[in-house]
Image (tube, rainbow, N blue to C red; front, side):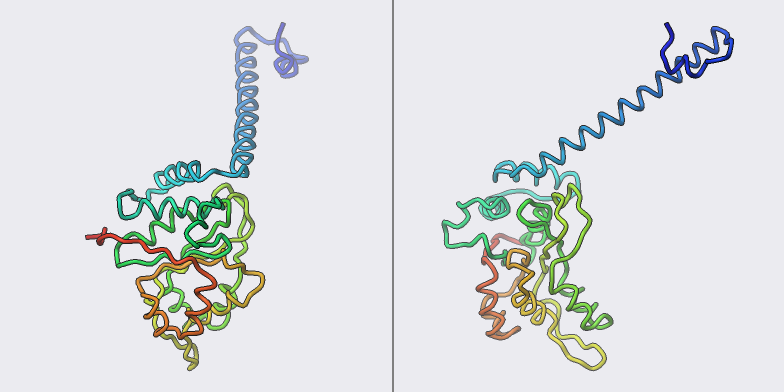
Length: 255
């Protein structure tokens, strides 16, 4: 008995055996495409469920390793960065163990350390996470954009960023931000107005009730004293409330 689809294709016609075989082949191919589509939809559904199931710190470490390989991020764990990597896995899975050394899960991360120790790469590994996904933005480029965008730039980056939900950001609709290389941006002007862009952004995000502290992260080569000199004691005081200060040691990995 012919497949119903083949019967439909051949209804009202007297076909040769060759034509019937061709119709059967087309029907089988159509059925296979349908099954493949259904299987892909089910795989996607299971993936979405998995992405929304809370990770353990160990599971996040494995996910980060897979994601780094997929995105071509070169990263090697060693005695200089292994403890920081572990701390960040705890932080981004909201593991209470993170708070044992006086840190807070309600604050953001300020990753400090010498030039070339891998601070930017380390934070880039965790941009997609279940706690709060974020994007990494260069402080220097941010300040350069202020020269043309002015106050609009401060407005945009002083609050959470809207984003289409996807598996990469764990289906979240808002992103946080990691301001990369704080201290490299300098003072900028927009139509004669001189502004310390990062100073204003930090204070704005501190004051903005819709931007919880864990939506904001930083990397910097500056010491606490240098931060006070660059941005003033008011900013330094706010940063103590906003960030967990974590130091990444080691030699310059880019040499």
